[in-house]
Amino acid sequence: MVPTGPLRGVIVVIDPGHGGADSGANRLGTSEAQLTYRMATTLSEVLRQEGAEVLLTVKSRALSIVPHEGKSEPPLEAPRDARFTIDNKYVGVRQHESPEDLYRRAQLAAKVWQTRGARHPVFFLSLHYDALSESRWHGGLICYDIRRGKSPQLANALANRWRTSGLAGQRRGGVPKARDLGVLNPEHNPVLQSVLIELATMSNRSDLNSARNATWRWKVSRLITDAVISCVKKT
Ligand SMILES: [Zn+2]
Image 1 (cartoon, rainbow, N blue to C red):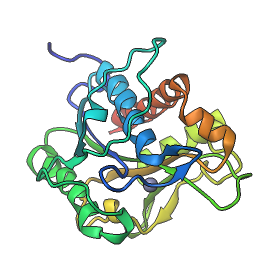
Image 2: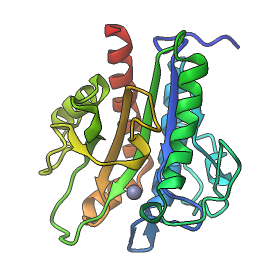
Image 3: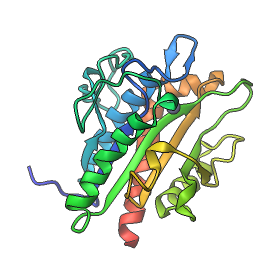
């Protein structure tokens, strides 16, 4: 089937945070990895519906489900079997302890950029959920790598939508935040439109409930897809 839609010819690399031996943050029996991998399935589906080619930095059985809007989904699954797409290596250590593993994620982006970036718009989205020591903070954050100098168009488009939809909560998600992020380090990840999204704050009960909710995931996936579409239109 030849894809149609506004994202035809566009490549989106999705990087579900954590997995394997690294569950990420944990709150009330839910791990960040469970949430990022499930979010990746919904986001992939929405992007593909709009014509995009979606590539994932990791492989896992948890990524094999194809969600259907309005239908019930299987329970969240821990992606303990996760392997990097680039070299099939097991996702075995905690992210902050191993920049090499973050670079393995970036390596797929670099490969796509070098081999196909001249002919196709390429986007890179790393998916995460934040956890803070205080439970009252809620909302998400849009982050880009501090070495980029200025925020990528995609980060601005996402932050606008985070602000207007209320997803930013009372955190500063309405403004892109510059951070030192291994997976977006331009020395390893050359994709200009690269963003890390802290989708919500797991340490807040209401955000955690949202993150676990399929309807919320569809809504956020459409918002992200809409932001990507707005960037393609402008370039
Ligand atoms: Zn994370």
